[in-house]
Length: 397
Image 1 (cartoon, rainbow, N blue to C red):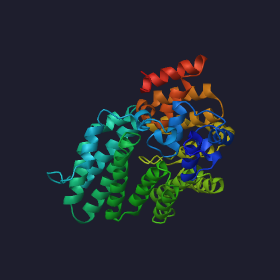
Image 2 (spheres, rainbow, N blue to C red; image 1 turned 60 degrees about the horizontal axis):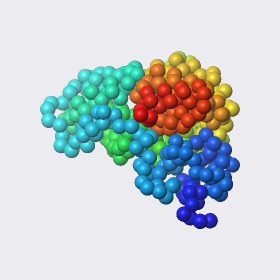
Image 3 (spheres, rainbow, N blue to C red; image 1 turned 60 degrees about the vertical axis):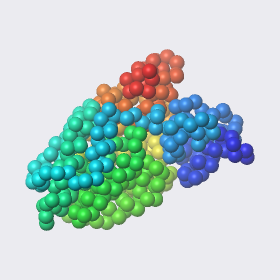
Image 4 (cartoon, rainbow, N blue to C red; image 1 turned 90 degrees about the vertical axis):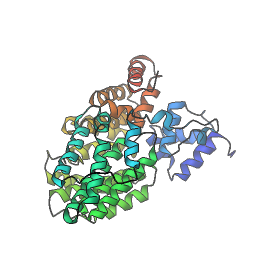
């Protein structure tokens, strides 16, 4: 095969990423035969939105890796920078210890809790937390360094929570190296605190980064290690952290196409959530029965089971998620399932609902951006509504 063709490059990157044709096709809403036809040259290279989706799934940062043409950074289309990004980036990259006295742990815990509340309750969550993150990072860093004994360990737990929030703020923006930095510093803070629950939460967020770069085995290992540190029989908090680790394992297995392992891990997470109660939701991690139900849609979609994914999405009670950004993300996953099922009208409808839940989540979600751009070329009401969405989230001028 001519290694200079688009098909040859696609196949090489697919195999390097360890993805079968069915898995790659499912992740971009197409069939294994479609992938095969692209690789064999029976189909012309897809249009830009689909090309961007392929690059994202394969972990490529430049479309030239697929097209062989001039450089076009994938992030320039799929990742939108928030207006306050530079200020938050400067805060997390700060080297000297911030000057000033330590904050009492009780006060610091309250401030961190308020920041998480802003994140979950706002329809523009990045804008809401951007105003407090730089100062909160400095305050938590200073307190973790200046306090002693138990107070220092408790401050380190809060510092880890601030880094988790910073990671969420930075996600899907043009500085992926800062996402890694936030995840790494959160894990370091949790380990320095010698707090098993904090380490388990850090494992959940670190696994997100690994899965995002197709390092599925690394994601699995960090979650397995984290889950062994907590005792699900001890109390509700440890049960929630353990269940969330199982949910992370399920997401990794489904992305790798391992259906049996994915559903075994999901069953364990769902059973843990059920033990916590039908209306339970962790106050900032958002683990609970509703979260398990939404991630089941993701798992079915990743496993290329569009009919099952759509059925699950159709029975979802999105209002059971007490977080604007989580509801928006769940609606986007529902839209992804409908696109795979060729239900483009339903997909546009769900994307519109996601926009009403959280402008920021839609604006920064790579799939939402490429889907709106791709669907905008469709005739009729699908194209009209998708163009409105694309304009609203800034992927069309």
